[in-house]
Length: 566
View 1 (cartoon, rainbow, N blue to C red):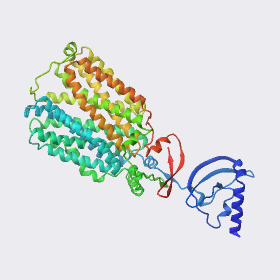
View 2 (cartoon, rainbow, N blue to C red):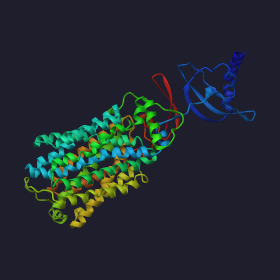
View 3 (cartoon, rainbow, N blue to C red):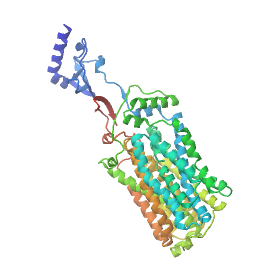
View 4 (tube, rainbow, N blue to C red):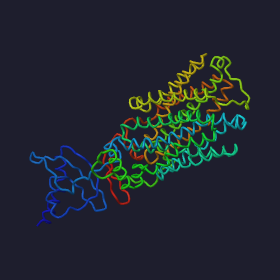
């Protein structure tokens, strides 16, 4: 009797499709899920609930929950078979867990990688003059010590990004830091110039993976805290640069440059010692099909923060092909990729340019003699001059300029947005470079360079916030790696402008930096995506669905999952 009633009810439900659709007042939700035949005895509850398109077990059917008027009363749903399972994404979980103890710990750990990176870069401005005198090196060989580090970074950055996208952020970051630590210490024992050049090049190859610390860190942050937190991580760079100058002031007069190279590897050594604590990104685990591992990581974060995990099932989006270079030039990202590459290039070109210009212009005394003659007289390439304590103090003051820039941008990045903040930094850098065309005294020169460096340093940090936000998880590390590689090209070119071209024409040199910065400011405004308040995307499909809230079906390996795309 029950089977007969169910059959009659099903037939009536099908015949009354048109009538019931006209009686719907609104559709509450549309989802997709696998159809399963109702259990015996549930057929009588089917009438007055939903209209279902019947299908076989291997098909997907639409289930539309609606409000239905029948005799002035709303029908109710009690059947468990028609309830949609609650799901949540990694973004939902991170928003529910919030910023807490776990994020503070990972801030310190990834910050150590930034400190080590800054110290290995800052040591180049200290090591050159010392070896110039001690080993009687000509100027081009001194410059090559710096250039070989940037060459190594430029070659390795895309490679480390590819490793992080295919094998994990934790794996990529840990391996590159171990590499840097090993060759950084080994370079302290270099017996001759050739060995030093070779080993410092390998150090640069390892440093090329340091930006992956930002990729990893950003994937543990809730949306509201991401901008400020990544900017605070960037403060570790300034701390590392200042610490290196102070270390040189203490070590160089007594112990020498070999001890400086060895002691500068301490922050990276601490990072390597504690990297076992570092978890893999849950976003990467979800994309790799390791949902259980992602849930374990999120549960650990919730426990350390004293919060509860959201209820439901974690959405799984598995993708086997990740980190492909061609994906950077898909129809969603080609414009963003090209504009970002130019912005990264301009940042490095201008940042390292103002650092080199500082030394050159200070050695000229002031800009009056420089601009009147429009050139700087060349010096003998073998002229030797050790750095004095006064030189280290001046270097310290110019390095401290990065902190005011960070403080200003720290507030602008979450109020004006990423694009406008980058544009403002480039425009202000150009604005404060313009007075250098005129005759200015030593004090005015110092103030102008201080402000210019503050703004270009702040802009450099904003692009570190924007880049991991704009690319999806599947190519995020590769996007960071290739952008960093392009930046190293700018760093390679800028010594020939700030040191070689400057001796031909100061006006032309300043015009190149101002023009490049202005174009980068315009490029920042032309970026197609503003990432302020935007969740991290998992794939290119998410990018196409930004601004929409739709429940769709993702069918992978014969399994259906509900994915809420925002």
